Image: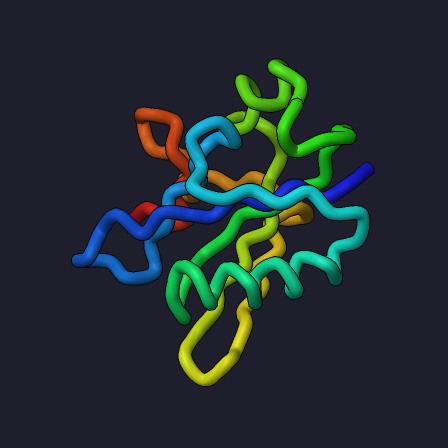
Length: 123
């Protein structure tokens, strides 16, 4: 198993913490690494290119080449298990939110009606 990370898209200026999780074939940047710790090296490089504050989504996958990902991985990206969200913040800080072990509870929506990840609670 390796870690695949996709650069998130902050598409809602009214909600600065919101970040879409684009499928690998639609992401502006992707990384495939052997160890979770290597994701932080990639994030540091992405910060230099895309700006200081960004969001990335990562999950463990079975893949050998970021340029030749299995079709079932790309097609199932939106519906696969819970990913890890990594946010870089001003001052060099990094926030990691691990959703892999969060139990499914009523009142919590992790997807919008269009299938985009959205991490908010509903009343």
